[in-house]
Length: 92
Length: 299
Image (cartoon, rainbow over all chains, first blue to last red; front, side, top):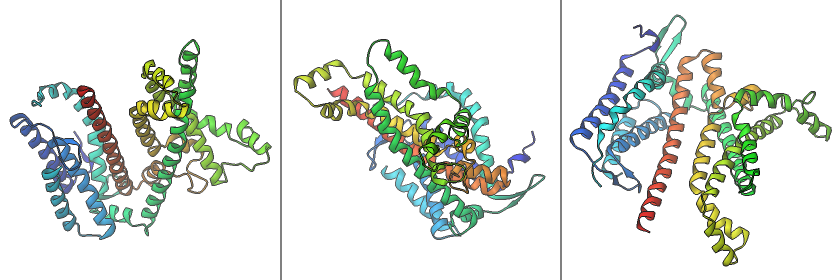
């Protein structure tokens, strides 16, 4: 199958592979370490998947905000997003 | 709470496959486009986050177009929500509760919802014309200058009225469903207590409509934030750029100028905004549901 039209680059490939592996890890965790929902600082019941979603969506906005307010490079934004994700998984 | 059995996910696999082809792969392609500059003949050049930087910079051409259409779109959503939600509640409250008029009203109310978007656009494009349109000619006949082709205010007015005409029924029908679920005993109790019409609305009807209203707001916000067909048919985004909403801007970029990179960056940011709003609404809705269920369980 021709995939030229999808215009892959190794950077975006890495990005999607990262997200796919995160999903895979969550699936394996759900199979071998079943969890129950818990209520965190936001006052809503969340599972690991919810927390991953909140982390990813928030990280996207952190990167966009950094790009809009500070500009490039984005390494600090990525660091901030990692901290944010850790906080989400710990407290939400 | 006991752990959930995850085997049911296997049954969702066929849907996942279909979604992969209809949504995930196109979305991946958009992400790929957004970091590259494209030329004809499938030539792509790496641009990193360049398009995003330009998009978020209000001083650049792309950025100013993005922010302008974003504010325009938010204003449009705010206006139609401010009109359609109260109006829908009012209509639902005045709809008949029993007898043959119920079906007649329901059919009448559902009619605008059944008309395809582009037809709605065409109807209003003709209806609001000053020369051959009933509405436009009537307004002009009253001595009010009204021409949606040249006047931005008239264009906005036309599109807002069109959306209200098209979608208030949805809000009304949802509210009506909420109202129907209120047992008669509530009203009898209110009558015994000598409650006023307003008190009945505030303490019985509005709380019971809470959930459907949330759904109505979510649906109307999403739909108006993604509106494309109607303004495209009626005004084509004009006069000037005054009714160029986000989706119209996006199509101009992607198909008019064929700037795939810029358009992809814009659509990703657009998508993220919608995703965030959807998530907030969904969370509020499910949390409210869970709370209502647990309260019902206790009571």
